[in-house]
View 1 (cartoon, rainbow, N blue to C red):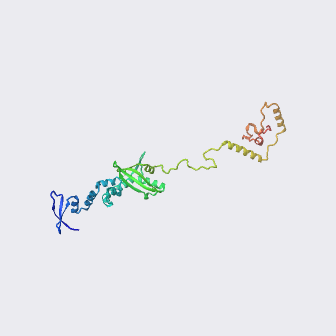
View 2: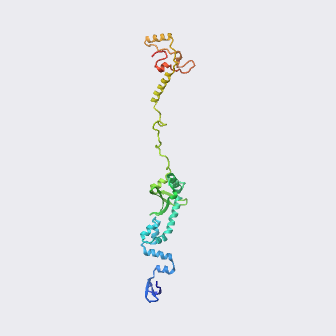
View 3: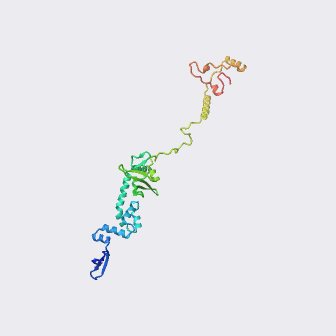
Length: 295
């Protein structure tokens, strides 16, 4: 590398004139901001000028793209410059985004009755535990939208699916407020999540449900059948009616039942001498006849 010596300026000061001390050959260098930064040893300013010279995007534009949610890789590819040069201007903006994402986690989601007591991070953590996800494996991020509002994003992996939820974060002195921007965000903040669905309880197929009454007709038939079966097994029956009582019954039958049949003494008034309700005789149960002997 040959050394050059500054020998003067061109008229108007637009270029610096240099010469090779060995050969006397002259050169000129543009007297621009890049040369001035190099002469002062200002490396940061020199690198910024390089980006402005080699790229169509200025540092302010690069930072605006990063603040709007673009990655360093996306900006570097768009500006056709190296990642290192973009990172130099993206670093403070990335710190700003990380700070906004952290503040958004401490915000309070807004519901119909107002902001919640729990923070966004606390509610999301409960929803993740209920779903069997690990919140530590999720990624938080934030950026500014076209209206200048901060948008908080949560990304997580569920099986082979990459999911994302977005909220709008409005800072204030009480931690800020959170508003859902998509279905995934609303689902994570749903206070009724995890409540068992009605109508899904299994029912036994062989037995009627506990809350449904059984068929009374079937029960009545079964009860009568059981009573008849029990009565058939009992050998003790009522004694035969007295001859006098049988004669009276035949007289009543001959008269065409003009008078109602007399009741047996033990059935008078439907109660016995002790005032207790009478019980039907076994003839009534088995043969369907009155205790007096009439069919």
